[in-house]
Image (cartoon, rainbow, N blue to C red; front, side, top):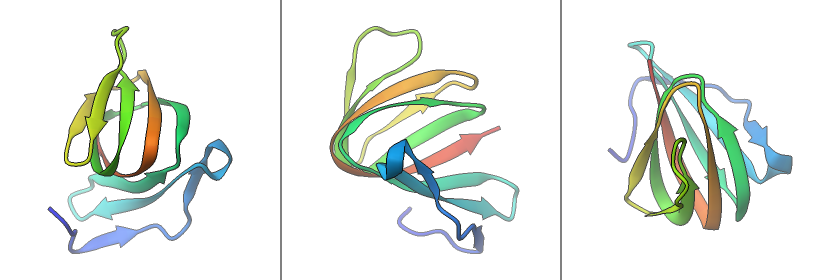
Length: 104
């Protein structure tokens, strides 16, 4: 899906890691939410509250998922899942555009 219809967008950006990661929150009529974001090259660790689906729109990264000790390469058009109440680390190799869906 390349666009979302009938959504509410929060204007204020979510800014992390000194401005190297930013996103905008989107709410849907059914109560679900997503963020659309952009990450500059670097290494970042995130914590989850809900289960997350990370879809990579453009760019490439390596991800270290909870319970694993091997980095996984992810590129544009691919995605990965992160469990709730967990931490994961990404190494952003090239500027990366992403969509994160929060799964309740």
